[in-house]
Image (cartoon, rainbow, N blue to C red; front, side, top):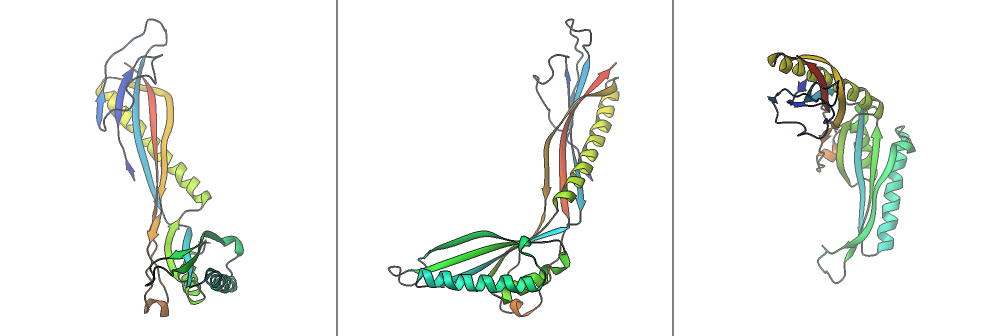
Length: 247
């Protein structure tokens, strides 16, 4: 899959990079130019292209939080620590290692949402980030966390491991370069030119979009097995290529 944005600009050799840059998508402006100061003066054609690939995720990030409130900060902190430890122990029994669990946020603050604002309660939050490579266990991990101390599920995100992301980035760059060359050939042909090689290439943007899943816990859901559908992850890469061309 590829979406291509194109622009062509004729530049004189020695002035490359100081001109107008990439033009409007789908438009080409070609004029003849020569430089008597250089024997290698010639025509260059600048094209921008974006390649995009999709793949199934191979990693899931589950964000859960333990939340406790009390009239005393020490009491809130103690309850928070107790429930957080219980949750981690339960996850360890599932085979979730310590390296897969990290603290995303820890906070103890006054909660002025109580009825008597002159005597606020304290709200303690310990949020965790759980990284999973076995995506079939996402629901089981959520259920275990909630049943053993977690008060809320903030987010579930299906994404890519670093190795898989690098592989797809390379594939997306290949798609972008292939489309750039095809479009450059088409533009050159329409102007009675021939692309003779690559003068310069740069990557301007590489990104990926994970598949987010929102999980809302209700009284009924808390007593049932959690099932979450996973979507695909898209990786995009954009290149700007300057080609040499001749008549």
